[in-house]
Image 1: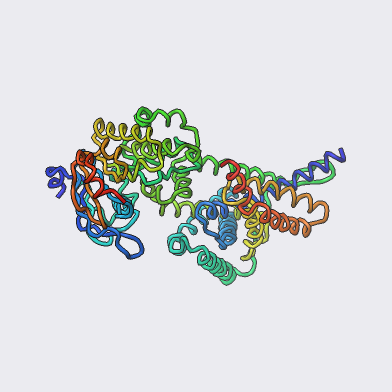
Image 2: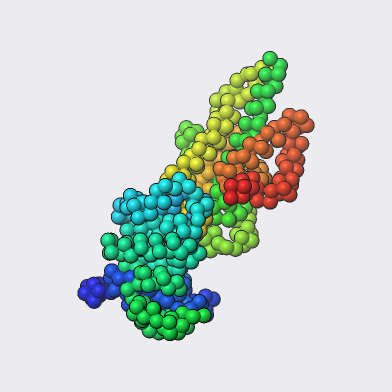
Length: 242
Length: 290
């Protein structure tokens, strides 16, 4: 089983995945396979289930049906902290840093990714995000949205994840910082081989980062488009316009 | 010399009240502040610590070791209770109050049936000393030191250890702590155990000064709740300053008008604080800091 997944190159796979709130499924049977080492975008309009997908992948929402496979292992029954211990780093929508803790303490929590088995590399995090080094004694709640986003990414990076799940990284962040964050995420993928799955509506960010681009609608992955196709106005109108 | 003697008497009483309030309240404050659980069985954890301490001392252990036994026993009972009862009632605060109240009744009555209405205690250790016109118990100074040591240790635990960082992350954004690999269930369980162990420690420390009756927890519970209400949900920004303020009020009123006035003044202080600072001292401090 394990070797199968390795040889086929898939790191994360969803099959027939259903999940939602209060017994009402939002995800209606998601089928998606993410290769090792890629950057995959899941795009779609508001309310099609993108954030629900991310929460189901990390386990904050239980799957009602179907399976999530990570490194060839079915993780659908695992709690979020157990999934994190396998090397999945979750960067939520709205960042959700620990507001009354310092930057350094926020990063410390991320050490638990991989179950704290890999030594935490703070210098690497600080090299990617110099602002965090500068503000490491500052309380996270007092920082700007862009800085908090960098902290939320740095917080999972500390634990050397094999997969990072990014939920709308551009939300509530100035355009200049969006570009900067996109550049850093691509660099994380390139230099450390971290697989990235992100959901996003910001075209600029999708174009800057995505190598594969999957369109979600009504709780399903309906098609894959090439990132270049997002320059085409008609495609964008069809899949992203509200 | 007259003034100095009176001043010392006042400071001693205020310190004694401070120690009592800190020790009575810190376990309750941790469980309430970290988990939002209002533990009405807090007094029975104190009773548990006191009884185990007395048994251990009568079995021949020195008092400090006896207190350690009491602390450990209350902590283990707390963990057990978390696993069996409290765990199933998170996010249901009213149900938790009823359940812990029930546990408190069962514990008090159970001890009454098993061990009788009163039990021979252990004498207060150390002797007394005189300052000015009055003589004072040395053991009370030990209790004051213990209160300060407990606060310092708690500060170190919550700020310098991995458990502490995880516990604070868990109070602030529980689902994110969980998603980052913190076993939040375990953190809640250990936190409840820590709060219970602190109650046990308090029972052990005060056992030599009290009559051993099954309802002895009630002596602590009113003042513990008063301190937590005035302080709010944070142990360091809340419980400690609240205990200091209330300790001074209580000592002043007690020396002026007697014990009853001391108790009444504390209740009046709570009513005023709830009116002015609904989230307690720590809620106010945290809001001021943004």
